[in-house]
Image (cartoon, rainbow, N blue to C red; front, side, top):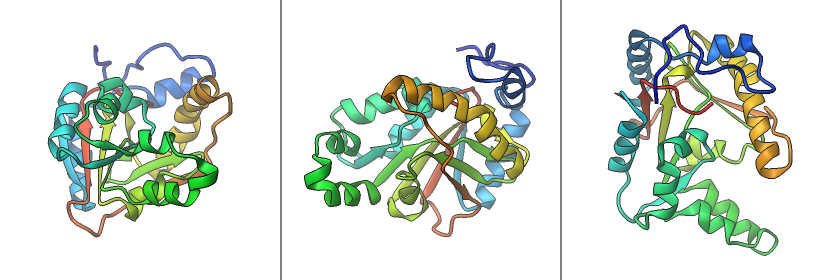
Length: 224
């Protein structure tokens, strides 16, 4: 994959996304901006690692997942792009909770499903924005994945494309509504036949348990 320059959007705007939003939020941050955001994450109590490519991010995440671990991978275009979703669900090295939940009966096993999804050993996912001072923003239509990120999961690993870095919380919220939502809404309609929605937004400003959350920041545009 060829990285766009910091001032150049990844592609022409797809249907539903404005050229202005693409220009504002689709371009890769500079190396200095990426390094500064990673340092800020450290001050927020989040372990951070900067890598050059999606493949390096994939290797970094896999190195942190013990064989046999119970892992829930959040729905994420980033994880799909770099092959991590496939690694977690199909490699046989882990206990993939997402596949297990798919096989359960929501009406008969609803309580067990909620418990499994709420407190996995590991959650692997991404974010919609990372501010330059080290805050993470994640939006969700249902909100189901937000609780484990806050406190339910034992460990959280987040892969963050370098185009997701924004100056502040206000810009992060704009990125969610103007850039991420149109793309996710289109994906949800195509995949599930239903619209998405910015119904819940999680902002992680600081982590009180050292080492619980790891952010792998990638010098490459990945995901939404």
